[in-house]
Image 1 (cartoon, helix red, strand yellow):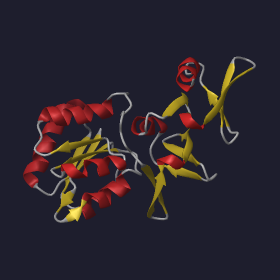
Image 2 (cartoon, one colour; image 1 turned 135 degrees about the vertical axis):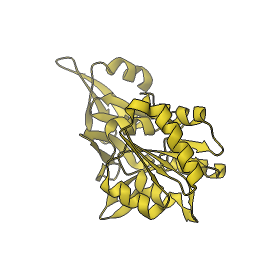
Image 3 (cartoon, rainbow, N blue to C red; image 1 turned 90 degrees about the vertical axis):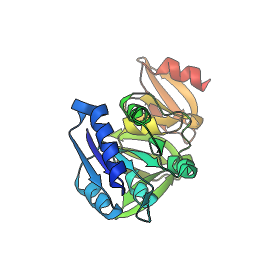
Length: 232
């Protein structure tokens, strides 16, 4: 696992680093500490990461400036900040967890375990995803997403206006971040439950979800019974 710590207070950065080394131990490939937003952004652009720990106040600069970029990337972000009143806003950016300062090893480990488990993050009030286009960040409201198709390490977002956007996170990672109203109906698809108009049983024991716009999405055989029970 490749980890970046973005923290301007050396004492706290070293404390996070020590705890992460203890928690991840043999699963850690490398760990980098950056004390400025500029250095952090440059490092993110040129390195592959799995996890970023981010403070929201960096020498007077806002961590949210980096967060807008971070949520469009393929890694998870854990906020470590004393600004508890910013937690809701941070979750709206799709962060994995918000660890308030002061913190201990147990609380940090709990945040890391949220990434290592396969459980969905319930009650996460994420309101949008971001995609990077022409070196700019575009916000995609969750309400506008109809379904998502996996495309290798990327995902295609299919929107209610008929447009399609490419997101840097894999389908598995988006599944953990999105609201419970999105269900994994197939190994390659996440669908918003409210968009399903009908569940069709086709010949050859094939199952399809017909959406309100007429699109038909395949349903995995192992997903059919569970999906039907939730849809009804």
